[in-house]
Length: 535
Ligand code: FAD
Image 1 (cartoon, rainbow, N blue to C red):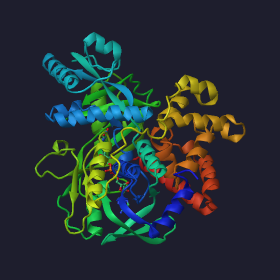
Image 2 (image 1 turned 60 degrees about the horizontal axis):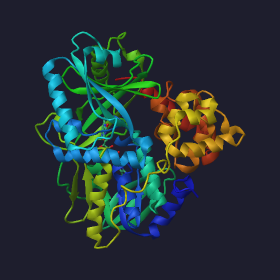
Image 3 (image 1 turned 120 degrees about the vertical axis):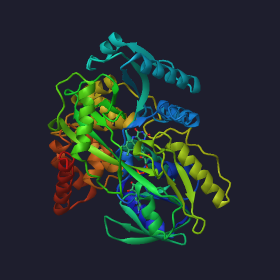
Image 4 (image 1 turned 120 degrees about the horizontal axis):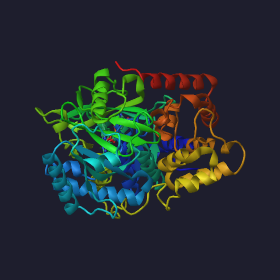
């Protein structure tokens, strides 16, 4: 049985009530997934429970960048710069497909900003270790326009170019959850912690409606935007207020904004926002506005969309982008620790670990995708101390993540094996699955239907969908199409072209009735439509 098969989920939920857990982690975003993997690798008896799906909260809704840390320099936070730069090298080693170097271009409008940027990038490279070929460059106006011809020439002085790493946030979470499960963690999605009392959690399987109880010596609250809600469910008075801010992204066809690099744009309020090319699309992000309470699907406001489009239209010399060019969008909530009086973008992104003295509940909030592994290490160090146990030291920096065990084949090599998916399809398969793409290629090459491309989903093999259904605990169509296959976000038609075919496969693998299958299709269609209409 694969560590993340649907059967493993039922097995985990069945086993939980009778297991004496060292640690229960609430929340299957990147924070909780990282903690569960670290704890399992240190031989703790750990369970990870996620109310909806792994990465369904903020961790599938980020800008998908593993930051080198240049941006933290402007706050003079050298420790954070070093941590971020170090961590991205670790991730590149553990899972190169989830840390893909991407040149980021910052256009400059005058000599003073150009020189200031150069000084910043020079300092960054003195503080950190930059791999060969990844050093910054300063371009004059002509060089900038030659490298990125779409830049608006008017008012352009030059540009700075440096390397950031592109990841896939949801896939990074799935890789960590799979690694945790393979190391012995009990993991389940669609399992909501409803109450906590004296080390005992009441958990509802939201798919079956069943309720169970489980006990753990330490409970970690890694519920992201819902950290305060967990305090309420545990009758704990939290030591800090959380402040949520919303960030949206818009997706347009790459042909509509055919960038060669990621480009930093300056929005009308002087904030930096990005345009990032990926998999035949270009996405724009992000905004930063306060929201009062966590929502599962934060609304995308037309004014926020207009803010990003305006920034793009000022930065690039193209036919102006309009709302009707937007093919998809996503919105996420940053779970930040409140700093009253500060504007959304000024609030620190640093993480903080908090322990409730009465109940012993450990909570973690804030932080970034980029530094998740170090955050997890700090939490598990604390858990081990509270357990009074001696364990092996943290091993998460040495053991590859799933898909990172072997060198990656090139997209050309993969395409040669799977001519039906084309170069773009091969690149997508490698980005999402890393070296596991070869196992999917083996399955596709065995003959039969698995080798076919799903009608309506160019470049997506039936073998990939089958593999994901069998080994990645996708329990609903949204789990499958959004957080495993990333088609809701990065397919031109939000995956709708192949929806019926994928639903038939899912129904077969997961034993859905006709009514359940119809409800899944309907729910997916509604979600996709809501991401194309702005309120
Ligand atoms: P989440 O991912 O929200 O996970 C918490 C989980 O807890 C959720 O899945 C939720 O369903 C679950 N949960 C809630 N209640 C319960 C319950 N009762 N029982 C069980 N489970 C429960 N960082 C970067 O490094 N690079 C970036 O480019 C970047 N861009 C960003 C852009 C935006 C717009 C935003 C919003 C954030 C960005 N970040 C970025 C930050 C990063 O995405 C977050 O720090 C990170 O994803 C937070 O992860 P988390 O696990 O703490 O929270």
